[in-house]
Image 1 (tube, rainbow, N blue to C red):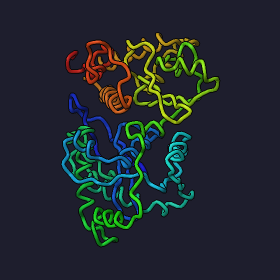
Image 2 (image 1 turned 180 degrees about the vertical axis):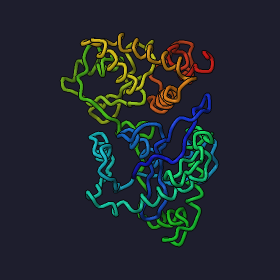
Image 3 (image 1 turned 90 degrees about the horizontal axis):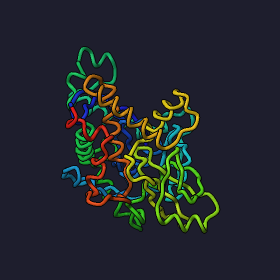
Image 4 (image 1 turned 45 degrees about the vertical axis):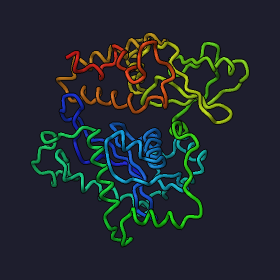
Length: 376
């Protein structure tokens, strides 16, 4: 597994104006050369993006393909036995190492200063990036290759459209004869499956698989709930933990959406715990950090939950005012939208009366990205 900036400028969902290059995380199965899974986002590589890529590679993809309206055969799934990675920081995170240990994945780190150990994934990245160079809005691989081509002026694909194109391209790659194998990768995969004495392992709880790879903090469950990042979370089921659990528990969180945290219970299952104040809108970790920094700059030594959410709302309004004028603001809005959508809980733990679960986020007035078109 490895990451690379994709050589293409994507546009935002609302104005379809140029934003930036997305980050692409790719995996390759060395024996058959199939691509088990991938992940594209506006985020820098992290333990969370690695977990998202692993989830895509390990879980069956029929539902994922159907959600995106893609009709291809993508049968690659199953928990891997060995994962080769380089020494990037995200691959050394305690969340990633702990998740691999829990699922029996043996991590093999590339020896330092030996790039040839990553030859398989590097060649795959080169192959996929070469196909990207045929798309409108490509940045090519160098200034010399780009010449006077106007990448931003030609950019036209949103992140979702690029993801769908990439999925179809994976299908093409799987069906083409591989020069070293002499057969298409998907054929090699099917043949290898027939030789296995046992079927591939799959996660026991597929809906919560990602939780095993999320970053976490150790916290005690108190009467007022769980406090994390100056925000309180509560669920009625915590009452038993307050009375019967005196030690700290791993409290996991998804940086893409802090609307809930996930308490790892002694039996390794997870309890989804929403915000104690259900009126609070979902926010991202990068919004939280920016708001906290702004409060510190204003001389606030003690930060409470109300001040934090007030600052997030204020900064979202600033983004809304600037969004039509600047690319940075559009990127920020698109980043928030994507993060909150992708990073939400496996299921909605709380739905206000009369509000359908699918429309819950849209009911919060301060969430800028969902109301851009209406309010402009």
